[in-house]
Figure 1 (cartoon, rainbow, N blue to C red):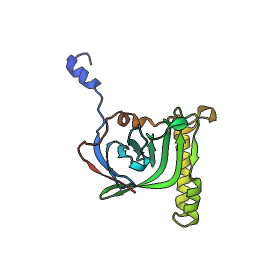
Figure 2: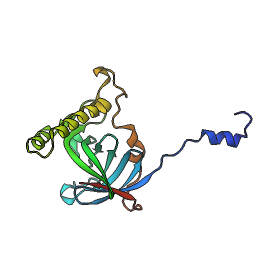
Figure 3: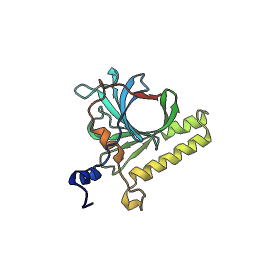
Figure 4: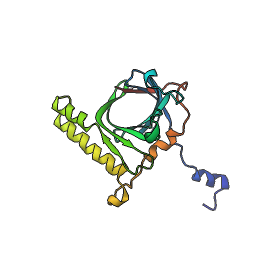
Length: 196
């Protein structure tokens, strides 16, 4: 573009800033939690209930919802000692409603340390119990197991375990912009996201 004025050339080089949308998440504790959304990623802040607070530790957790993958990630501020800095990952189902999005726990969880050099799969017994007690169908259980494998392949599988497409990345890159934002409490309200 050598014939265009320099200011016009510069305008072609500017990249669009992602749209940041205000959202609400109604946490399973009954709290209405403020959050922000960029594309398919929502971040929200939840105040820890007094019985879960640890003296001298922060009292607000930030969680992330990967809407297109049905994943919720939290680095709990109360994790201490050998699990400090680890991620707690929930498989979730996100149901759109007129009031917003309802987030349902799908029983299977992960504990992932910094560096994601290993991981722990949790609560498969809860998934089995839900199936045997009729709280979920066999088809729903199959979906949960498939999404469990998809999460492992997409975010936790190491290079030495064979090629992965897309390459292994944890935590997911999509949360970075939201992770660095200041606390959402006291910020203006937005659209609804409900969690049960």
